[in-house]
Every structure is written in structure tokens, then in C-alpha cells.
Image: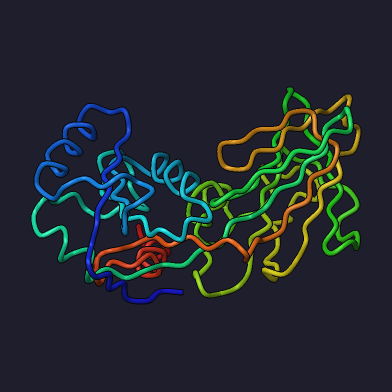
Amino acid sequence: MTEPFKPDPLRLAFVASDWSEAQEARRRLAATYGDTPEHLADVVVALGGDGFMLEVLHRNLGANRPIYGMNRGSVGFLMNDYDETGLVARIAAAEKAIIHPLRMTAVDAEGRRHHALAINDVSLLRETRQAGKLRILIDGRVRMEELICDGALVSTPAGSTAYNFSAHGPIIPLNAQVMALTPISAFRPRRWRGALLSHHARVTFEVLEAVKRPISAVADNVEVRHVTRVDVVEDRSITLSVLFDAGRSLEERMLAEQFAS
């Protein structure tokens, strides 16, 4: 979902990654536009790359505080172009993308339950040289008895251009109300390319031969090792707002990415 963002008045908080160029940019922008504490700001301006943007989004989970990124990193898919001029006007005219995270519940080999949120994806990955073996259930019904693979992931639409796309998963429009379930280097069934699931679906991975073939589960930057079971659902009670310059919305970027050479 994309909609215009029109705050009035506008209090900005500038946050930056540890990279020197990002820190220098933060100092200049704060001197020009003022710097409000993050918890009091109308908009948080994140200066860095996509990894730092994810950090800032996680830090503001549940705050209903829009994040406007400017690229002081490498790829910057979630970031706007860096420009120090006319920043207030750009943010006032920005388009707001609404995204919802995934909630992961992972059970480890000792029976402990771990909870984490993922804005991009929840990934299961083999820990050793041996391929993993996973059973996949959708809403409690077994859909794949055994997937032999390096791993598998569940992606949000917002995260579908990241690891999911690298693993040959589909790019999903933001308003499609689906999630991608994508295998990572599937060995058997060899030609299985994954599935598109309703955003209401509950995905369950059961790890087969968990001792011999250990698997870790990763929700963005949170890793749980030696898991035996992982449940993934979309948490629509949490809303995240990311701002993009007019005409450069996240929807537009995702569409353009599908036609890139």
C-alpha cells in the first residue's frame, strides 16, 4: 500500500551508520535542519545502506514513526538518493509504503522457544556440509513431506527483492497480500521452485534428522541455531512506514527491478 505523506509541522531525527561518510552527512544535515531526539521526531532520516535501514526499522517497531532513508551505503534499494537540498519539501511530498513484518517462533533442540520479527524474510539454513531435510506444513497440513536443500525462506513483499530474489524467488508487489516460500538450492524435489501463499497462511518447517543435519533459523538479524521447528506468520498488528521520493515509490522500484537487465 502506498499513500502520500503530509506531516505538519515536521520534526526530523537524523541517524547514521558507523561509516564515516554517513556520520559526516548526519552532522551537516542536523546543523541545517535541526535534530530532534528519535523518540520525539515526526520522521526519522536514516543515513546508510539497506542493512542500516533494517536496523532503524527494527528499532522503531510499533512506534508508527515513518522512516526516510538516504543512501550513504552500497546498494540502497530501500533508500532515496542522497541530496542535502530541499529535504523538508521532499519528505512532505514523499509517498508512504506500508509494510508488515513476519513473526518467527523457533523451537531449538533443547525445547526452548525463541521469538523474533523479520521485515525482509525468515530463512532456514544448513549448519554443516550436509544438506538439510525439511517437512513443510501450511496451516497445519503437510504440503511437502521432505525437502532436501541448503535451506528455505519465507519472504514479505518488501523483502522479496533481497535474499528471496537471489534464491530465484518471485518479486511480489507490495499490495499483493501474499508471501513467498522459496527453497534455497533444492536437491529433491529438484525442480520445485517454491510457492506463493496468502498473507494469512501459517508456514511451519519441521527439521528432519535435526541432530545429523542441523539447521539454523534467521529472522533478519536474529539467528537461532539447532532448531527443530519454525513457525512463520505475518503480524498485521505491527505497521511500518517507509517514505520514498515522489515518483520513486517502493512499488515502482520493485516493478523496475523485474525488467532490469
